[in-house]
Image 1 (cartoon, rainbow, N blue to C red):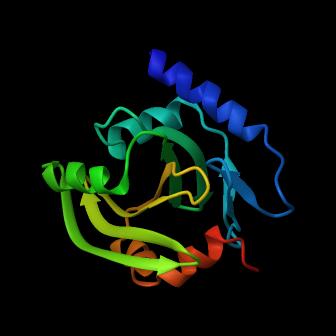
Image 2 (cartoon, rainbow, N blue to C red):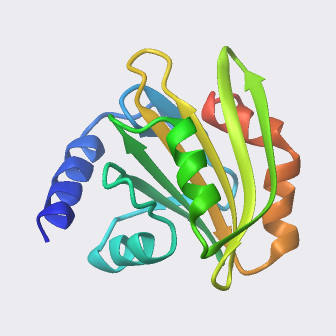
Image 3 (cartoon, rainbow, N blue to C red):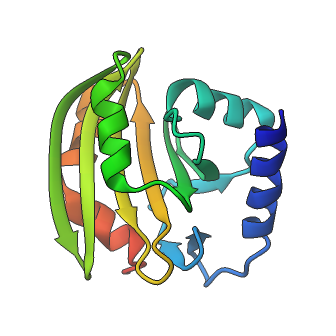
Length: 169
């Protein structure tokens, strides 16, 4: 319960930051240019419980930072001041509830990313892990949906992601 309250307080603090027009801020210094049908939604107890059940990793250090919806597809953005993409990789590889289809690494705009395409329970997920440049906090993007082909598009086209997080028009 303390972790839930802490996560909601941290989220409220991050939500109070000012945004550039038509962007969503997350982490400490990161920026997302939402797609045409994407919008940020409030993190409710229901959203937090869903995240903990279907996406959280047992590191104990992840904080849900943003939830974005685009119809039936959701994006959960979490962050950690203690975890690394390497630790997340180890935890995912040993989690028996996760079936990893593909993993790849890519570099864009001076950042190194690791992208996973996997299934957990009835959901297909494209998880992208990276460190913020200025403060070295780890960010996780989880694109989640029931349709594998839609989620696979995000996995295959990392430029789509890189352009969005660098707030390119």
